[in-house]
Image: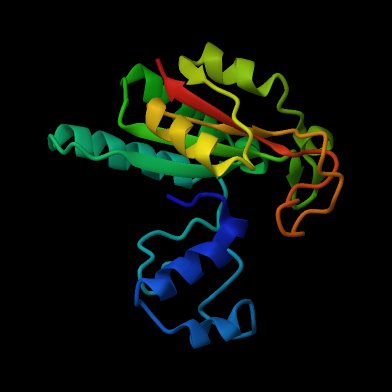
Length: 195
């Protein structure tokens, strides 16, 4: 579940590589009239759920994990959140619900880059102490360098649910610049898992 709505470009490119449409069609990305909008849209072939309204991805992923467990499926559900969308109350309801129902087949990854559409997360709505809040709600929390793909992948499979913080002191660049995607205020990733 790609709940982090502004990460659509990678999803759309992946779906094109999987044959849902041609790569050439992505030339219309974010243009007037394009189905390839800046937030995940179910109008795009291969996308089942729109997640443009922040705070919907985690509750949907929780429903998927609960349904999979009820059906006896051995599958896991992964959900990528942004820290900015953790302002939404529906996420906190889900954060309480998943550990209560022991959804060990759910993995949550939060891109904790401390930047959101309207500014710096701490100035819009301070989430700190972010990891401690997840722990208090019954999640296992593990901080992983979000730029280390091997560590992030291992963390996702090692724990039932993960969230990543993004504070590396070596990337004083702006959001959207290659590897230095985060900006000087935030450069890390944070994982959490149901205990």
